Amino acid sequence: MQELQTLEPAPLDMAPLLLCAYELGDSINQSALVAEYLYWKDVVEKDTEVLRLKAAFAKAKELFAECERFGRFHPDYNAAKDAVKKVEAEMSEVESIRRYKETEAELDALLYDVSLMIAESVSETIKVPSNDPLPKGGSCGSGGSCSCGSGGCG
Image (cartoon, rainbow, N blue to C red; front, side, top):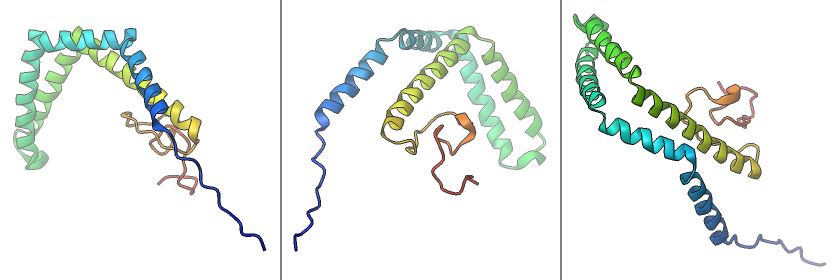
């Protein structure tokens, strides 16, 4: 009787894969989107109005955190919460912050799409992490198909 031999896959040479990954990273880094993101990031970091608002936000958050320790029954809870919301609203009106957040979201979406494309070329069930709290397609947090086997992911 002839023995069955199990064939093991050849070891994967990571060098070409790493080279392609670095080239892909370089291509993304040289894109107009990354240039725009870096521009607005720099503007935000140097904007005196942004720095003032960041300090006010940190102070408001600290006060709110102190009130939150005691819950909504703390006498200053609502005022502290309103102060945080007020500074957040002021920050959303600053163009440099708004543009920075927009380009950051676009870049995040691009990186997610690239990751998803790579993952799905290997398998439809591979999960791809996302910063989006509400994943695309309403599935299990990966934006891809759900592989939990129950048809729902409760």
